[in-house]
Image: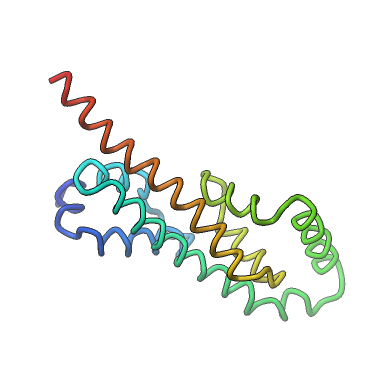
Length: 159
């Protein structure tokens, strides 16, 4: 089996994009995304790694948004408890700055797939959703890639 370093070097940026897409687009597929981005940042251009991974993550999260948007009629068809909760959460989301909430979920280990579904269900503006999401993913992936870049150089200084 290939080591993680060999895998990153073999698959390159296209492999990073695909892994990043899958790690957010298919929520239930486990992925060592953080470790892969740190490793890629130590081997490839960390700025490019951050950008490619962010685009992959943000595009993958659109899958959840589309599922939410498509399932809106089903989830809101029933006028009972579920609809009341969604309405309540939507008001809270708008009151507390949806754009910032999306950014925070994208930048942290919080479950951003749930935010994608919620934004789709509530018909949150897809452009604003994508912008907040990609900015959060860009900040996260650049941080991880530069941890890999500077971390490996820091460690090599001790050898």
